[in-house]
Length: 377
Length: 80
Image (cartoon, each protein chain N blue to C red):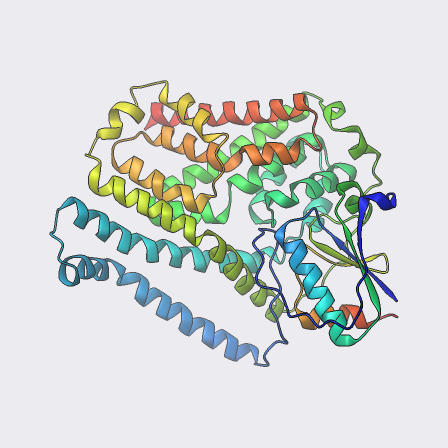
């Protein structure tokens, strides 16, 4: 333990009663609910879940007619007009995306209770380089992660003997290949684009991590990190299914509660482009034939910080107006995978050279993916 | 006197955890002192990989979440 000046001491008397705080606005883990759990058998919960899913499905299927009805029957808008197109797009896409998001975030929230960082680290610490990179990239999808936990996680992995390159594979894959991105791509573009994103995202994480491992840059990790004792094993929590479902509900409250604004802003921008920007407008700027659009997209995307939920509706509109898939994919990946705030956080544990290498290799890989898709599709 | 340590670099959840812990401890009527551990090196000395985390008398009791009041009370009332 460190010296007392690192500590911010607060002495509390026990006389003041304080109320439970409002929901926080950080991305780490699931927040706890308040109050004791309601009793209720597993069968009852299952039945409720089934009914909920059915209602979800019915509502989801009827969003398109509802949007048309609201735009052209309730509101005095003309079919085919700029404003009409924009409004219909917004009214249809917003509930659709939010509903998809809520469902998948719930499922992933439950799945994640099976994959704690401690377990992931245990799996990775015994593995050699290449297999380790692949495993790390895959585990990055299901292990709970957020950028404010990036440092403890990085240190936890490295001090436990997980190779540096393998750790980077995880650090690349965890934010980039996430459930929110995949769901939105699946919902808005179909399984092919979602699959492409998943495949190339994993490939980038594996290859970039492996390359960083090959470069032997261990000495470019800040010295104090390596002096730390190996992180202790966390006690394995035993969770019941009720706990896991609660974790799912909490992550919906947490994640959807946080990103819905961005989703709506994203869709609103998308709606504007959808209604007002002429078809094929983007073809000249972001089309296949302008080779420079890929590096430019990555250059703009890297410092930007947005989550998948905010960027994908924008991406959808760009694609619809003739932008090339590779360019758009490269833009999206660079926005989600790399950002200025993340660089600043990681600078605390990485020396500048390693940090730049990391960003450089990932940005280059993303560019290659962009070029490849523009060439193939 | 229990020593309650909140481990976290200062995101909103760490503050939420601090408040939740105080509320639970006040409800239980136990004597305690709260300490915020914000330096990353000191946090890592506890061996946690997810913040915010709660340590009671030096032992990590929860990590990566803000537990519910019921959970907190259970954590705080065992092993005096």
